Image 1 (tube, rainbow, N blue to C red):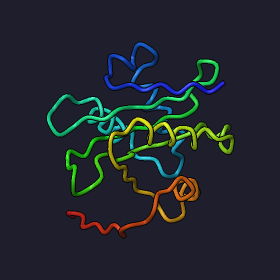
Image 2: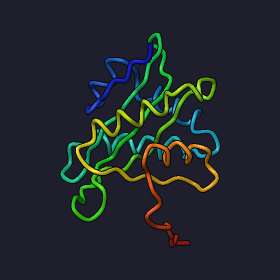
Image 3: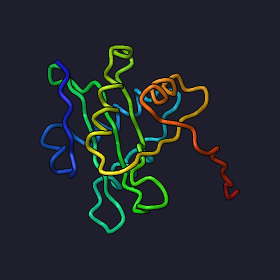
Image 4: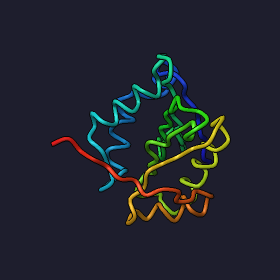
Length: 148
């Protein structure tokens, strides 16, 4: 049976599992869409920050006490003109994809966020179909300028 838990502090999460375990899980199961472990750690630090304008939470899905999926949500601190939350990462154990875990994690994210949610998804990411099925729409094309 799938159990999804919400963690709003690092201390709360680390009673169940270590931050490094979550970083390793996300790094492994984000596959080719992964960020570096240091970037994942920064997103977690932001989610658990008590600084004004920061914060968020982690959702972790377990089956038989094994971590099988996770979501990292960051508050934007910009309520009123962009969505209040950014879904930074969502990952499901690669061996368990297609069993509804991602759908349940997204639904839990909708239920726990007290505002709108945005996310980035690459055009060729197969998870894009899930996001669209769950009600996400493409509002803008993101463009980036990178300092060289």
